[in-house]
Length: 156
Image (tube, rainbow, N blue to C red; front, side, top):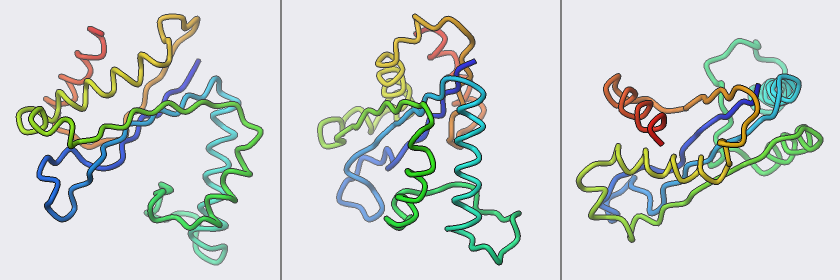
């Protein structure tokens, strides 16, 4: 089984001059080819979190469960990258310059999100997959938006 992990960076706000609204919106998918690579990446994340982010003296169970790129030091990133250097994986991204897309964002951000996700997935040639693919999406949306997203991907 192949594993795909989708994450976004930035936001789909269209008033670019407003504080907290990013100029770019990025969707990235991490493709992990099998269970062994998945377990190795999970182990590298856990070790990085325990040893570098949370500190060895803190309990292992903590509410911090994600490495945020913008909030993570170069030293921690380098530690993590060394830990995953020999693990097979691929990264796919699409970067949206929102200045080029402002009118569409004003009407339906969910459709823009779905479209960008489709662009990333098309780069991956999933039509050639020979086994199952598990897609994990890191986002918090309403149940209706999730149903729309799922239906959109299945139709594509």
